[in-house]
Length: 164
Image (cartoon, rainbow, N blue to C red; front, side, top):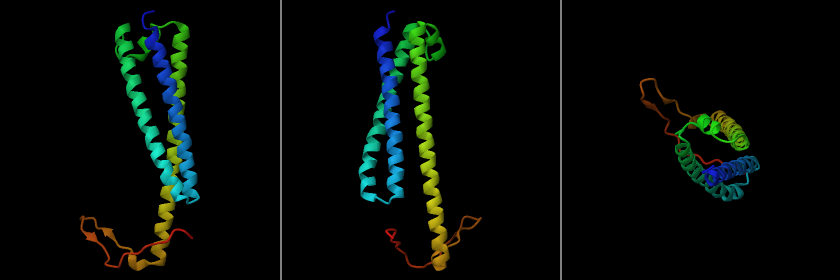
């Protein structure tokens, strides 16, 4: 088979992307823990790490996609995963299928962790807003009316110390 090196590199990139997404999911859970514990300095240090991981995932994705297109063209199945898999030996096909399955699971776990964190943050923000509305009604405003006109109160700005 003439694409052995390309296919091996493709499988390595597939595994690397899965590994990076798993790391990103772990960092996402760490971030949620730091926010829950209100450890802002540690959170500020973690965010750049997560950004770098995310950029690494994107780079590997681009490299993997480029290699996929190259393999697909060489096998005569441009952009068709099923066609590529059918043209490969069973052991290679199984390895690539396993790699894609692992990648899909990693992505789903990351999406789940992100959704949990998003829900947590939205709930906390809503609770905080409702508490402030009850305690300081003069600082709340009607927002926008149906016609798009603003209805804002002119109460002074307020700072809330969240380190209780």
